[in-house]
Image (cartoon, rainbow, N blue to C red; front, side):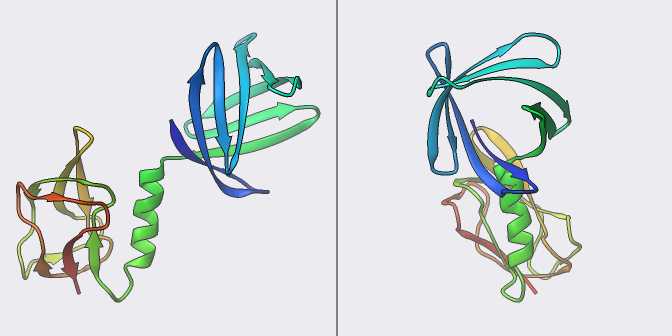
Length: 166
């Protein structure tokens, strides 16, 4: 499983967690480590790292926000879905180019707009099937659809231009 973790002190860090025997292999940024993680009670966990370090910690979560306390310190970590983060960056980056691109490879299932249509930010533009899931690609800003670069049934690679909004 891959996700982004956000803390006040570190900012956003990419994390990958893989099952490894009875424990886990975890990548935080560029560093890999092996860990055993055991629930001791409703909020208490035991964490043993591959270097022999063992920690007891408490863990409370509310949606995607996790509060972890250990050794007298408390850290709040927000878990971010990478696809949602890409969408947010795309909305920030579209700027004057107006080109809406595919976030991942997939197949265009339906095009919901036509050339010349006015769209509002958040309006559905097309449906892209990726990893056996249908994902609605939405307008990153208000505007008019100037150009459609895809049609239903077409497969696209990540980063492919789908349409242009001005």
